[in-house]
Image (cartoon, rainbow, N blue to C red; front, side, top):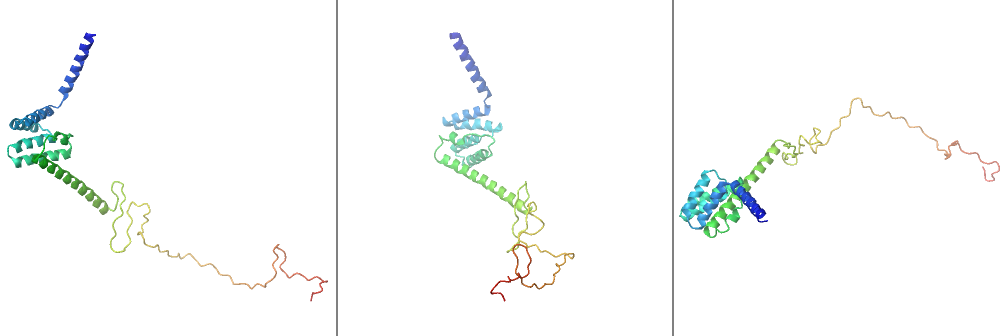
Length: 225
């Protein structure tokens, strides 16, 4: 039983060792730099983060903490430059990390400065997206409506003028929307021949389809004339 327990523990240790070996070495260096930063060793933290950045890290936290280490040394402009780079990397999302959680222990003026930079970066990114959407919409209108299968009715030319239909409108028959269709009579069309009216002598009509002449009066009718 003891041998089985030891074998199980060895297997778990080997598995954990494999996971640790598979971890990104830049993440390990970042964690070590953060440890030095919170111990107050700003110089060592900055040196380690410089190595991580030189290795091509796209982690926004690396720039935020290097900026914090620089800010402690009084280099505010350089710190703000790192904050801006970190905020832009966070927007780009090449490496998705929880920036807010990593900055939980950072408070005061430096945290306020970082949050202002992050908010400004998000607003700029949103403005760029809206500008791209507006530019695409304008391009669709200029092309008459058909872009990627979309149907956009072109704007009115001016005043109350009829609006032309889009070229891919299934009801487009070459006419302008709102314009009445003028029908021209053909030369082969002749008016129907009008027959002269024939005078009709009023007679009693037999509802059963018999003769329409006036019926004879009975001979024994005392009131007959």
